[in-house]
Each structure stands twice: as structure tokens, then as C-alpha cells.
Length: 148
Ligand SMILES: CC(C)(COP(=O)(O)OP(=O)(O)OC[C@H]1O[C@@H](n2cnc3c(N)ncnc32)[C@H](O)[C@@H]1OP(=O)(O)O)[C@@H](O)C(=O)NCCC(=O)NCCS
View 1 (cartoon, rainbow, N blue to C red):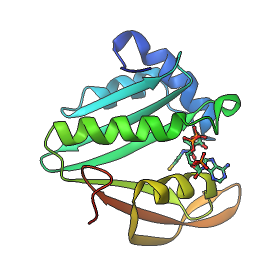
View 2: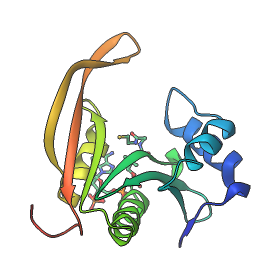
View 3: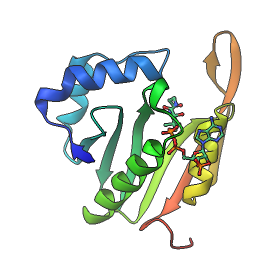
View 4: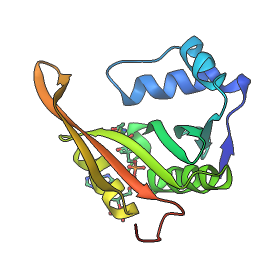
């Protein structure tokens, strides 16, 4: 089951984010982001994963998505992305963007399977424990499943 996060979930979102990323975002940071018009978060399956999305006019962006390590590869990431895309489309977005490290194979496989294609690349944008990695901007037409 996927549900929309509420102000009561800020701590949960921060905790999930810290389990998924080296750089953690605090509950206050989530509160700040969710206060921006057009921004929403979804939580999956007893809070095993989250996605944070911003919609601005006809474009939307995945700001962050993650699934608890012990709950990965069970379809939750795909379900969260599909729900985020559907909701963004419902809010008027025609295109969905996101940024991913070129080294993030699991995420890139997921996004490729959902129909995202590379729209740009920032060379050596990320510093991952001393190792530089390119940032890829990926783009998909909404609704997902329709070709560009
Ligand atoms: C990326 C992430 C959200 C995927 O979540 P997930 O719940 O494991 O994904 P799903 O189980 O829905 O997998 C969907 C598809 O993604 C791909 N995939 C997921 N994990 C993979 C892995 N470890 N290796 C290769 N492909 C993988 C597969 O194509 C999979 O489809 P399949 O199960 O039919 O083969 C999760 O790995 C994660 O939280 N990573 C850390 C945070 C992160 O990197 N977020 C993205 C930042 S841009």
C-alpha cells in the first residue's frame, strides 16, 4: 500500500533517507521541502520506502527515492516511482525528471525499465567517498509507459 506522507511522517522520512543515503536529510529539511508548493512525499508498505516529488507547471522532478536496505528488490521502488509519476501526471506534469549517479546500477536499471532516457550529463558531479561520478539527468514522458 502506498500513502501520502503527512506532517506526522517527517521523522520517518528523515530516518528512511538516512538508511538510503550517505548524506542524510533531517526532519526539518523534509518539512522545508514539503512546504514548497507542488511538493509531496509518498510512503510505501509500512514505511519501507519513500519518494519525494516536486511538480512545477508541466514538469515534475523526483527529488529523492529510497527503500530500506532489507526491503529492496521486492518491487517497492518500482511501485513508488509508478505512484509518484501517476500523481505528478494528475497534477498536470507532462515530463518527469530525475538525477542519478552514473555508478548507481540498481537505480539506473529501475529507471531504464520505467522508460527514462538520458537527457544530460554533468561530469564528475558527485564525490562518492573520494571517487568522482557523473550525474545523469534522466527524463520520461508522462504517463509512464507511453513513448517519448
Ligand atoms: C534504487 C532503489 C530505490 C530501488 O528500490 P527497490 O525496491 O529495490 O526496486 P524494485 O524492487 O522495485 O526493483 C525494480 C527494478 O529495478 C532494478 N533493480 C533493483 N535493484 C537492483 C539491483 N540491485 N541490481 C540491478 N537491478 C536492480 C530491476 O530492474 C528491478 O526489476 P526486477 O525486479 O523486475 O528485476 C533502491 O535500490 C534504493 O533505495 N537504493 C538506495 C537509494 C538510491 O540510490 N536511490 C536512488 C537515487 S537516484
